[in-house]
Image (cartoon, rainbow, N blue to C red; front, side, top):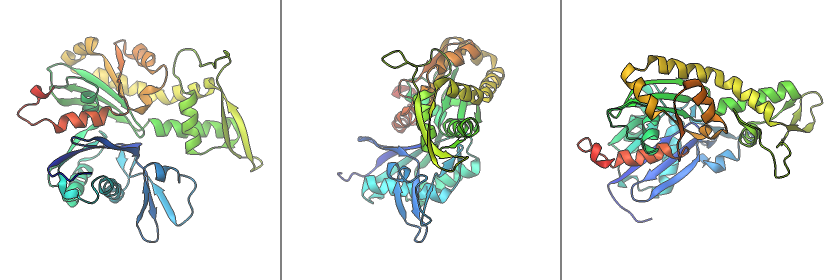
Length: 341
C-alpha cells in the first residue's frame, strides 16, 4: 500500500463487527469485533475472523474477548489493542499518515467512555479524533437527508443493543436504547434449546439457528419440494452428557424471538410518545428506517409497521450503513454540511 499523509479514517465500533474505512481506498476491514490475547505475554494472537474461530475452543493460555458487550465498553484497553492491531495491519505501522479519525459508537456509551475513546485516539498519535452516534451515521449512510428540517426515525438493531433515534437538522433530538439485540437473541435460543430439548449448544450454533430459521411474521420458509425448513443443532445432552443432535423448526424460533421483541416494542412506543409533535407529524411520511444486522430478520418490516402504523423501510445497506455514513461525514466540514449531501 502506498504511503500517503493526511488520510481520514472512519471506524464503526460495533458490538458484533468492526469496520474501518480509509479515505480513497474504501472499507478495508470488516470482521467480528473479537480479539484473542495470549494470557502469558499479553500479546494479541488474532483479531476478527481468526479470533472468532477460537470462540469456545480455546485452552487456558488464550483469552478470547469482545471489547464491547451489550453496547457498552467492557474493556477500553482491549479496544485500544484491537484498533492498534487492525490499523497497524492496514497502514503497516505507518499510523502517522492518519490525520483524522472518526469513531462511530453505540448510543448508550457514557460521557466518561466517550472521553476514553477520544483519548485512545490521541494515544495512537491521532490528535484529530472525533466520535459520532451510530444511529446518526446509519441514517446518513442509508441515504437519509438528516440535515433537513424534518423528522426521521431510525431503529438500529445490532449485536449488543437496539437503538432508537429521532433525527432532525443533523442532530439526534431523542434517543433510547435497550440491551436486547442479536447477542441476546442467541442467548434466548440457547436457553430455549436447553429447556425444551435438554441440549446445551454454543453461541455459534445459536447464531446459525437464528440466521437459518428466524422470522417474526408471515409464512414459514419451505424448501424446493415445499417441505418446511428445519435445521440441525448439535451439542451436549444434559441428561447423558453425551453428544446429541436434534432438529429445530422455524415456529419454535419465531416464538423465542417474539418474546424477545416484546420489550423492543415497548421502547418503540415510548419513543414515539415522547417525540415532539411536529417531528411526529413528519414521521407519517418519512416513516421508520431499520438498520443493523438483525434488521434482516424476515417479517420485521411488517412487525414494526403493525405496531407504529406508519411506513417502515429497510436500509439497502443494513450492515454497512454506519461505515457508509462515516465516510460521508469525513467528507464534510462545519461550513458545508448541506452542499455535501
